[in-house]
Amino acid sequence: MTDTSYLSAVRESYDTVAADYAASVKPPAELDPVSRAMLAAFAEFHRVLAPGGYLMLVCRVGKDEHLRRTLAYGDHPAPFESYRLPADRISELLEQTGLVVTARLLQGPAEGTVGSFMVHKPE
Image 1 (cartoon, rainbow, N blue to C red):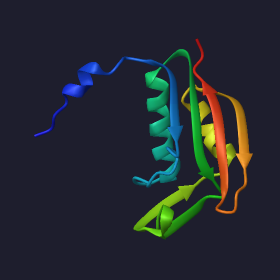
Image 2 (image 1 turned 90 degrees about the vertical axis):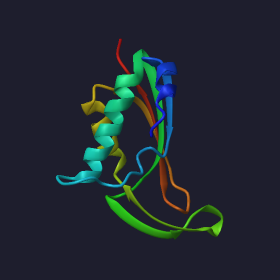
Image 3 (image 1 turned 180 degrees about the horizontal axis):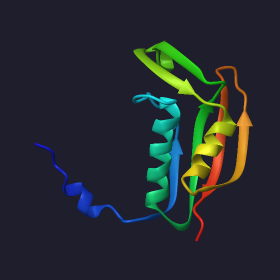
Image 4 (image 1 turned 60 degrees about the vertical axis):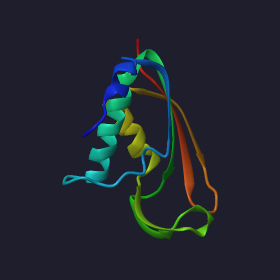
């Protein structure tokens, strides 16, 4: 049995959404599946943002990299896969949903480049 009572307390839209590493997704099916999965997530951000609202998206970016890891932070065993798209591709996907990328910052630590995207939903 699934308890969905929390849904009644969810607002219809939000002024601000923060998404940390939401773009590190597993791919679903076909046709550039990583982009397809991200597009679905970004469309949901567009849906819940109020007109004029903001999204701050932070994620690792790369060159269409598919990574298979065995350790998580602190060297804890945790096998997982992640996919890193180029920053330009992430911006394109955000804009395909009707969101507007107003700023983008790329920082390159030793583990890989982190992309921060400031996005808003037009009025």
